[in-house]
Every structure is written in C-alpha cells, then in structure tokens.
Amino acid sequence: MTTEIQPAPGATRKRRVRSATSLTRSSGIGLGLAVTWFSLLVLIPLALVVIQSADGGWQTFRDTLTNSQTAAALRLTVTQALIVTLVNVVFGTLIAWVLVRDHFWGKRILEVIIDIPFALPTIVAGLVLLSLYGPDSPIGINVANTERSVFLALLFVTLPFVVRTVEPVLLELDPEVEEAAASLGASRFTTLRRILLPALAPAITAGAALSFARGISEYGSLVLLSGNLPNKTEVASVRILTYIENGNEAAAASVAVLLLGVALIAIILLQVLTSVVSKRA
Amino acid sequence: MGIEIRGINKFFGDFVALEDINLSIPSGQLTALLGPSGGGKSTLLRIIAGLESSDSGTVEIEGVDTTNVPAQKRNVGFVFQHYAAFKHMTVAKNIAFGLEIRKRPKQEVKDRVQELLKLVHLEQWSDRLPSQLSGGQRQRMALARALAIEPSVLLLDEPFGALDAKVRKELRDWLRRLHDEVHVTTVFVTHDQEEALEVSDSLVVINEGRIEQIGSPDDLYDRPASDFVLSFLGPVTRLGDHLIRPHDIEISRYEQAATATGKISRWTRVGFEIRLEVTPDDTLHPDPIQVVVTRAEATALGLHDGDQVWLRPQAGVEPVRG
Image (cartoon, chains in turn brown, purple):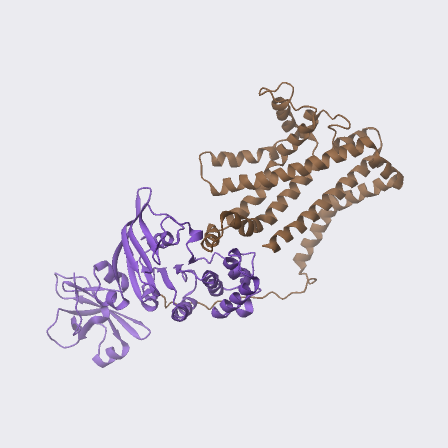
C-alpha cells in the first residue's frame, strides 16, 4: 500500500526566472489594452479634473476650500465616512464571521440580503431610508435633517464591503489553526489577536478602503433624508453639484481634487496599518 | 501514569463515535491508534487533547484528571494532518508561539527555538514562511511547535497522511528516532497498518467506536484477537476452515498431506514476490486461495502457472479459526 512510487517532492518544481520587463507578444497586447482602458476611464478624466481645479489658479482653490460652507461639508463628509468605516470594520467582520462559521436557518437568505444595499439604486435606498427614518417613520425614529441621517445612509450603502471582502478569507482559514493555537495554550482572545486578525487584516483593510471611498463619494442615498442643510447636513458631493449648478466648475473641481487626495491618503494609511498588524504578530 | 481513559462515550447525534472506551497508555511510549477511517480513533485523540468533549467518562493525564480542563490548560502537544501552520509567521515564530504565550524570557525562547530547529533539521529555514516549505518540512515544523511547550503528552493525528509515500516513510523512521531521543509519551493515529507496526511500541486497534485489541505489534500480528484485527493488519486468505496469511502457506508440486490442492490459476509478479491464486479442486471450497512466495522460492520449487499444487499451513503457524 505504501510502496507505490511517486515522484519526489521538488522533482516537478519549476522556478520562474524572468526579468520584469520581458513580455511575450500576447501579454504585451494585454498590457496595452489594460493601460488604454484604464487611461480612458480613469487616468485622463482624473487628470482633467486636476487641471480644471488649477484653472482658476491657486487662489480659487484656496478660496473654495476655506469657504466656511464648503469646509463644513468636507468636514462632515470625512468624519461621517470615518465613523461609518470604523463601525463597518467591527460589525462587517462580525457578520462575516457569523455567516461563515455558524449554521442557522435562513443563512442563505441573509447572504443575499447583505448585497441589497450595494445592488439597490442609491436613490431607492434613499427613499427606503426616508420612509423608515423620516418624518413619517412608522417606528417613531425621525433622523431627517440631522447629521445622523448622513451616518445612517452611509452605513446602509457600505454594509456589504467589509463583509464581502472578509468572508472568502475566513472561509479559507482552517479551524485547525485555531485548535493548534488553543493546544499551545492560547486563550480565545490571544488567538484572535495573534492568529485570526493578522490573517484577516488585509481583507478588512480592503473592505475598509472601499467603505471609506464609497462614504466620501455618496450622494443618492443621503440627499433625501439629510435635507442638504448648509453647514449642517450638506455633504461634499452635494456641494460639488451646487458649484456646477452655479457654473463655478473650477470650484467644483477643487472640492473633487481634495476628495481625491483624502481617498488616496486613506488607502495608503490603511495599507501601512495592515503591514504593521501583520508584522506585529 | 501516562494516559488513563475510563468509560468514554461519544455520540454525534445518533451516530456512536466511541463506545465505552477504557484504555491505559503507559508513560514514555509510542502508541498507535490504528483502525479504518471513521472508526473513532481521531475522535478519541481529540478527546484526550480537549479539542472535543466526551459525553461521559474521564481522561487522566499523568495522574491529573483533565476531563474538565480546557485544551489550553492541558499542556498537550497536538500535530494535525494538514499541519495547521500559522501562515503569516515565520518558521521560528511558529515554533516560539507556545513559549511566547507563556511569557518566557526572550533569550530562553530564542535558545529553545534554536534547539528545536536543530532537532527537526530546519535550522536554515527559520526565517521562511510555512508556504515556502515542503509538506514534510511543514510537518516537522508543526512537530517542533508542539514539542516547544514541553508537553506531558504528544498527540499526532494522521501526521503523515498528507505526504507522499517516500516522504512518509522517511518521516516515520525519523519520528521513531526522535521519540527514542525525547521520550515524551506519544500517541499517534493512523489507518496505515504498516506505519503502525513499524513505528509503535504498542498498538490499539479501534473499529466502529470500540477497541478491538491492545498489544505489541508482534502480539497483534501473530495473535490477533479477532478476524477484524487479523485482516486489518495484513492480507489474509481462507485455507480449509481457517484464515491464514498468504505467506504462511507451504506450497508444493508433489503430493503430500495437505489442507487443499488445486491448480495455480493466476500468477502475478510484484518485485521480489510472486502472488499466486490457487483454485482448489474441492468443490465445497471453490474460492481461490492466495499464496505469496518469493521469486527465489518459486524458482527452487519449480513452480509454473497452471501447475497442480498442494497447500498447507507452514510448520509453526497457528491458523486462526475461521
């Protein structure tokens, strides 16, 4: 039974030795196509926005951002997106955990429902939220025209991100790894901190980045409920629209560029955080 | 001392995984739990480790009743079939894990890890990630990780099951040598009878949730308590009214006092041995009898396919009642 002949491990191992620049014809075409596609859709429009924001000169840029109404909108947007992201990191991971590790009736249905906030047209989401948490709320909770409405709308639309990024990684995690940690004397908390979180960190980060990016850019789901009150519930995307409507494209571009910068910084910070968490384990 | 298991029962719903298991595993020995898949041997091992709880009965490790002690506090080393490596940690970090949790001084941890790396021959791999190791190396790492906490017992669940035949053989020789060095009470689960016979000091055969027999490899092979043990430890064939191992049959081309006679109906050569099938002339026992002879024996006896032969148990072999 144990005498069957099998190739020794390593005998079939191949090592890929290829310089970073050598491309075959097909991969060259692929790369070209990818870059063209990416440029048309992302790079060129982004570059145009940046150029447009510089159109009115440094003065317009600074004036726009120091305008008290715009500054308030930006502050509100970034703060709410941050809080929502933090909540998602905790609860998204928790929901993913429950969906992967626990078996209960209706799990399949829940799996589908999770994606609804993401799949729903945002304005429909806004309508749903308005009817449930607006002035005519059937459950008596009215958050219309308050900061909380922004928070709620963002929470609604960003719910699936962390859940969906963490789930597949959690599925791959072998429960035996936790048992190994336990047999070595690790408490549940130590296992969570030293084994599970480091393994999940990249997925949580990716979900958090998506959640934050969606948060600072959200428009449709919150306009109905928040009422867009200047200095109170007006968010950055609404502010951009107002500038456009008033024909002040340079100012609109300035706000856009700032949001772009914030998103970029957030993504970089999260990447750094991930590597710190992974290394500390 | 060692491990004392008394009256263990375990059910998974209606399925009886273990039924009234009583077992005494002596200190410092290498014991194999052998049996077919799904027979309950892994469940028993996991109950000893505290990774699974029994529905009744007690487990005592080195004189301490651990029935209600959680896995974390049992000080048991456990090695899994699929390594259960901490993928984001280097080999050295994996091995150090148990010691770091116990808050041992840094230098002590470092020295101990070095010592263990040497023991499992992974010194030059200490900074690699588990994904950069071969299966055999990963399992050695897992073993070092389990040994690091100086466990009172070392439990291995099909430790070589995921490895290919050659590496499996190397590792089992190595485990035997390692155990001769370290002397920790070791229990390992396997469904491979050759592995169990070769490595262990004593064997526990488990089938359908019950212990079939306990004994040394020689005991079990030569004096099996049941047909199940006999047939599980190696091939058997029916000669007359008895079960016997195919290599314990004396074969002759000349008429002699024999248990059965018939024609060689099948001739298969596998390396040094020749596996024969003899179809008996006795119509009451029409099932073919398996006989194994070495190539040299076959040549010396002048055997050929289709020959008429006479079969009887070899002198000194006690066939088991059928």
